[in-house]
Length: 140
Image 1: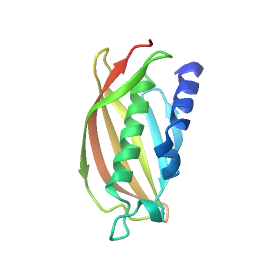
Image 2: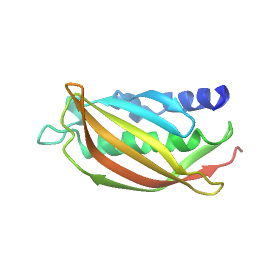
Image 3: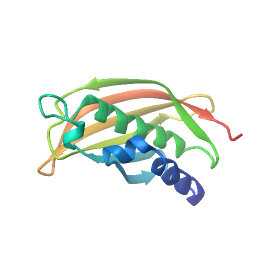
């Protein structure tokens, strides 16, 4: 991935107020894959004390979207057209990490996947599998 695309992704991520509110950060940025990590804050827990599925979905969707964007030329954008989530286990721990990747790139549709893990005492538990489709948007 060229430095222009990398900088564009970092600037785009920084402009997402939800990611800022969740305390999320990009922890890895490679061509076709992006990892986003977020603490499980008191404000992002559900009634049983686990990470809320909304936190899981939010960072998983963003990780997949930025993975898709990493495969496109600078100046492009992507929009999620559909995203499915399978919740596999409670999000128990200190933080979540979403590992987004491109399954099949394309000019009109990009098929993506995110695997989300809860991290507790440095042990990762797979808590969600997400699959979806991103639509590339050409520069204006």
